[in-house]
Length: 452
Ligand code: FA5
Ligand code: MG
Image (tube, protein in one colour):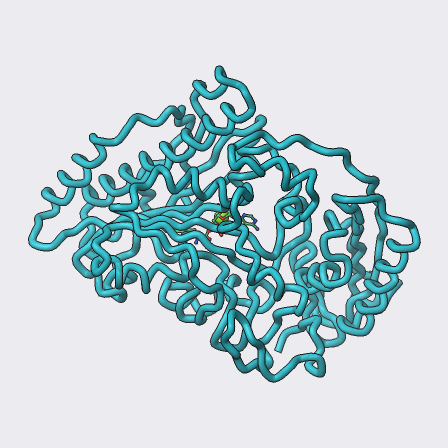
């Protein structure tokens, strides 16, 4: 239906991922260039900063309470990734321009939440009330120093038993557990109300009392404040700054929306003068627990980006570095101790612009978002992926620098600036020209735009 830069003629009829062969169809949009990432497992690679970050966070959640799942395969059903989490049918996250489809029914997980239901279902058998899941996740996205089509998330959850207990008894148990927890070394600069009245309500109609939701929400926030204070004091110690390690980390709680939690929050951390979103979380919606056979439980869940935390902890400036085999990077993490990353020299940038006309007809959508190409819609992520497919990690970022609509023809013109820069060497002019020529020709061939 919508555009894809992979021409149907190039698609094999099957795709083998993690030893399982899947049929492909008109939904399939996984480029070959993505396949090697499915077996990299940076979160399990000894001494890699992503794995180190995972270990630091895991150390705060006792394995006797929190089961660990770190090897769940990335191919999941649309039901796991979206349907059973309550994503509406028209949610943008489901579109082929945002998500990698193996086929109509199967995707590369876009978040670790895809495993919530199956793990809630089996948790009790394993004698645990919580879990931590770490895994690679996949999203079609923009190109810049903090976005990559593959990244790693850690998801945590904790359930409290309500069987044969009154709401007041559940609240007591949660609060008792809370009292036993350490005081986090954070300063909460701002906090949204524990529940907003609209859009992010307590699920009273599903049997959550305000008091229960409030107790579970506090338990969740305390646990996560402890997590960030630990992570950031480790980072300061690693940088040899004992004084900074004792300082309070400034955080704020922001009201958020996820289809599978209510109320929901995001936790932001003040880092180098900027507020950075570190994770999303909330009280698990009761429908999901009911579906997973845990009708008589109430609990919380969170999901965080391991790259984002590792970049803060170690001062790593570019997300491509995590994938680099450059010894000036890997050697810095060899001893397995958290050490502040020492920047190595940057190689020169090389900017190249490409401008093109989209097809005629239905006008422009949101900035950079859509337009029409040869009767089909233009999706910026298709363009991003085309550039990644050609330039790979030699592209640092891609920015839309100009767009306008011709007053007479109504056609839309886009101009993007591609920044070519290797992390490992100086690129030659010839090499960059060749990459740019490929971008231009594939744009015409595969996306049907008219070059200017
Ligand atoms: C989610 O993925 C939800 N599944 C999180 C969640 C889990 C909510 C459980 C409630 C309960 P979101 O898309 O905001 O939400 O991503 C969560 C975190 O992943 C972000 O806070 C961020 O730290 C990280 N993240 C998201 N997108 C990227 C990206 N493109 N690159 C690096 N990190 C990212
Ligand atoms: Mg978010």
